[in-house]
Length: 243
Image (cartoon, rainbow, N blue to C red; front, side, top):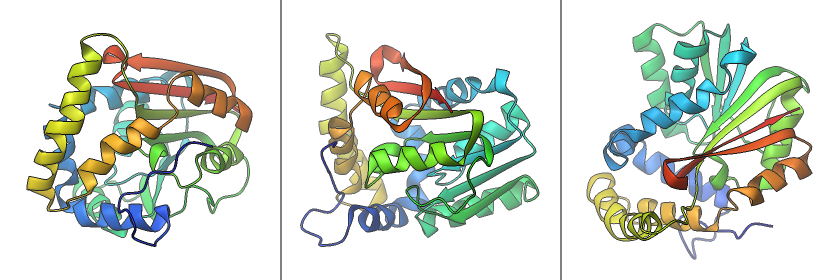
């Protein structure tokens, strides 16, 4: 079982409750900080991850931990599905997503709902594809979450998971650790006014079983043809698996 890291230590609430509170706290600054702290590279990574589904031509897509909806909007632009449903445990993030959906006139193609990744309120074999961007490391029970994602996938459907990973090569590893542990938390606190959100980020990445460890978890859950595609020297990774 992966190490359990929570946003607010000695809080008493479950990880799930703490993660929801954290994202509610930072929701209004989330998009700005995402692009600013990654120097815009997160946009390129999302495009690469969605590109893994181009050949599959999915018509119904579930975006788990959809947040403010950026990954789902990218899926709509690149894949032209009939519909994307996004679920998240943070009402603050979903409210931002709803505003963006209305502004873009996509209410008929993109719907967001409150939802728990470990108890997805959908029937078995429903979706052509399931996506998650920067969300699986926040699951309270990682194995349970990816197993329920598999349950709602149609046979032959594909899961695409985009997540931070830990680079190993010198000097990328050292620069990455300095930025993640010394620079990013300070900038995050300055703009988000949440003293823990951007300290939790490097802690959660450090605790996440990335690379071969994560594809092993996917295989254990029942995914076939699992693959790990590292991006930018392993700073981020795209994981895919088939039901």
